[in-house]
Image (cartoon, rainbow, N blue to C red; front, top):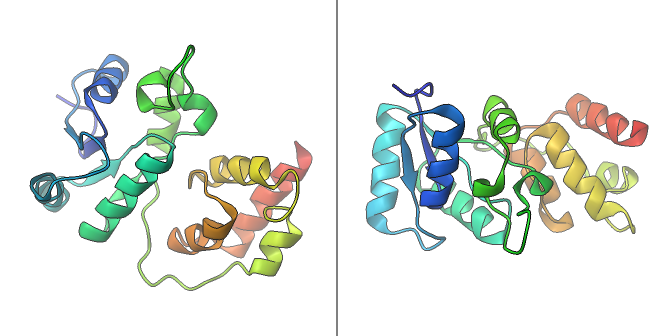
Length: 184
């Protein structure tokens, strides 16, 4: 029996294999790439209605596309984000859940976030810029670390404010994460 009530949505069979190696028997739905079929979306919707869904995709552009597609089609799904450095292959290849260590997978699945529809904008662009998260030479690295600290994944400068709103990050949470950035 799986230790997760929810069904975990991943991109492919190598991701399922890695999760099974880490957690034992586990129920997954594989999207088989970023062009998710209507049948797969229907399966995800049924899983959400019956058991709940956790979306765990690669921390790259196709993985983000999959997240957006699922979130729009199946409201209320929960997300687990894997830091980019934790999904890096040891040799050649692209980022992927299949490369993550058991510790990284446990951490990602222990820090789940759910989008909040119509959440108010709580963090201003001025605050984001003042925190050095857009427009500076270290902005990308700071955004990546901020995403790890808040468990909302990496995002580019244009999308950061939207992601903060989407996951209802409060000014206090934002300030605490920025303080951790400054301390490290």
